[in-house]
Image 1 (cartoon, rainbow, N blue to C red):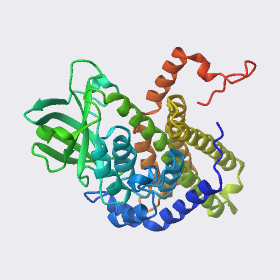
Image 2: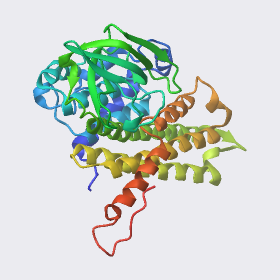
Image 3: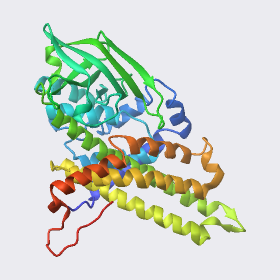
Image 4: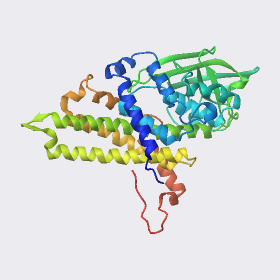
Length: 392
């Protein structure tokens, strides 16, 4: 697959980075971590006006019909500037889930408003067990009168405090994958929300559904047929978190290079020492490998391919390499890196949070092992004389 970005994509990435770096000061980013919603609504509105909120939606819903790779370039820029936004909850999760599985009425109701920045939506998938398999789901969705009731607890629900609706995954049958998606309004009777503390400063919530009632038209997709759509959601989330980790790594490397040129030790910049140069070279190597893998994953999913192999490789690599890169950056900086007023500490915690989202390195290595057992040919080159390429 050719994953070289063209001039238009390069312009999009540069424009997104220029905006993101000017949108919020480090002090404002720190302040937002203590607020209920965790992001600046005015900045999100500006991002929507530039077309980012609807970038991957068709034109009929107010989008531009761009691909997932273009969205990954935007996410990478936001990660590099550490700008918090509801792009994951509203676009990557809820928006694309509605595009995949929503009814025509649901799409027409939500997608144009998401694209315009007028609606925040989210999903409630993960449960206290923390697993990503369908058998982990304990929340129940049961018929009641002309609608349904939802009972269960969900964790790590992104931006729930600002969302007008939560697309909840629940069990509707006895089979492992008898799962259904339903839109629960934030003000629905029986829904309770509690803000969680998050290492990366994100707005993550606990959602408790205690006989929460919804109408019959709140079902998203076919009853009992939710899991393929949720599995795709996990893949998209992992691919784009890989892109965010690349942005975090790029910012950490840039800070390190700048510091090593100005920090004087023994009457010389520390960047002139061979040991520091070796560290920086290794950081750059891991960053570029991670970037190519993240772009490959996003491009594969965006073109409608399975993308599971590419996404697992990208998330496994970035989840290990980018937190390690930030640790090396701390070593080169020394004590100053641990001050909260210095931005490297922010990127370190963002990397820790991002590596765990949508499955950590261990989860995706196990996925790769399963894919190898099922179809070894997918990991071989097109020519029988090519050696297998090991990306992670």
